Image (tube, rainbow, N blue to C red; front, side):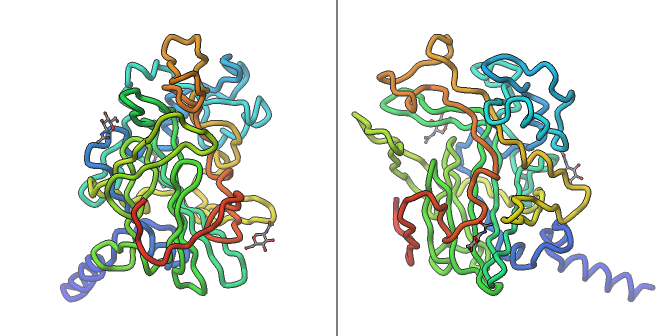
Length: 337
Ligand SMILES: *[C@@H]1O[C@H](CO)[C@@H](O)[C@H](O)[C@H]1NC(C)=O
Ligand SMILES: *[C@@H]1O[C@H](CO)[C@@H](O)[C@H](O)[C@H]1NC(C)=O
Ligand SMILES: *[C@@H]1O[C@H](CO)[C@@H](O)[C@H](O)[C@H]1NC(C)=O
């Protein structure tokens, strides 16, 4: 007995926390190469529980509450809103966000990197069937603080879905995508930093915006499709608190032909992934006293609209980049941006 208990203890001690958390059926490489994220050291809006977003919001269309929505809304019934306004639905904060309610701030990862009590990540595996497997690691935050544009705070919104994606070829990581604002950057897997010199890519989440970068520092970003009269807008990243998203994630496989998600564990909620509305408030109109827009430019308003969810992030890609018309440059070395 004594020998057996020592052997068991040893087995438990050597198992990584990740292996204990992931449901069976998830390809081991999706776990072994799951990215780890450094939040910015001064980050105010940390990863948040996906379900808590529903508890702290009410669904609206054209600023009117949807009367016959399921109550309560849950991760299992959120897709019922597709028949009640769909893409025009905004999950709208029940408290005035200008008062900075606590739920917007999310959860600080614990010493192991886990967002305790908060499922803040969604991991989606798309097996293309030709040896290519794409693993999407989605990161959820309850609020996005947009940034400071010449002393003025612009681009805040409730709800923030970001992601990185690792493309595996015959079980080996080959390339990686980092989402940043409406596009992002791709690198070869060999180029990116690895956590503690191991297998897991390192991601730096920018202060407030949560754009994902491969290196720490200051990153200039322009707003796509807006010819700014002034510049620049900067993102800031550093090696702040470590977040291991895979420790509190929901795991799914994705079928591109049917556009369906299948959870690896039958107790995992799924229907919320089909909701085609927005995970935060609609952009406040200019006559709302909370709103203020630089030079009347919609993208430079203090508050913009909440984002759509993972299904809208091109889960069946030809290359590691989204098929969005931009050139897909897979950088072989880490370059500043
Ligand atoms: C980080 O974001 C907060 C708001 O969440 C802001 O007050 C602060 O100035 C930002 N820090 C840097 C270095 O940009
Ligand atoms: C997080 O997910 C786990 C596993 O699916 C579940 O047991 C737990 O209740 C979830 N937590 C919350 C806050 O929803
Ligand atoms: C999914 O993407 C692959 C390219 O990797 C493509 O060959 C296939 O037709 C796509 N499937 C669907 C249903 O669009």
